[in-house]
Length: 306
Image (tube, rainbow, N blue to C red; front, side, top):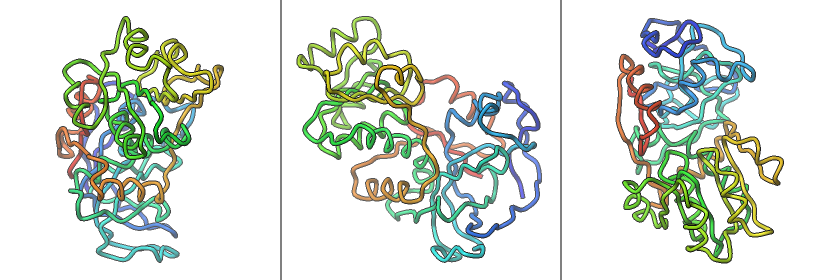
């Protein structure tokens, strides 16, 4: 089968090449998925540079990609949840870097997969699991938020926009930081936008004079602002800043979980979670997708379509 691969750690995305690789083995408790769409996440190109090497071993050549949506074409032993022909979606990270989702087919743990609702396109389903799962875990970690005020740093980004929608669906008032060009987008999600940068603390304080009850940081470098606007009993999380641990915060890292992905799918199916697709790319265009992702100005999801 064809797959996008890299043979060593590198920051040069042009070293990615499409090659023929062996068909994945369908291990017990897994399903073989014909890939229809696979979301691009910043972790994909960060892993390529060796950024995850202290945490995860790599088996080269590595096929990048952890998100997937596709059709089950084979079912392994002890995977009664699915049958051939099922449309599924999953956050398909394994314990090593190696057999990823930027390929024609991928073996996925049945425990990580869930059925794709008909209301989602392949591209939307393929772009949702990792970023959506990170957002869901972050909002869950904030505790009950109905009727409370939540500040989201980088609310127009991939994870932030999902978190904002999830928090709104749970009844929270959401204030979201973003550049002015994304303010109208956030208003469309029911979010009160605020410009980031110098003076952010003062602007948030004007909007929430008594402070905010919870903060979710999806960009980093915001701890001083977070602590200055948070109520004394407020809670805060970050996906990028370990310094929050010393100030009562929590760092979020999402693991594959089909039940969590099913919750995301249900939110999307009810119209409470919108997945905006910013662009689609073939296997040969993975380097370009990585370049666009690295620029950091994407609103919505970039998706690989083998």
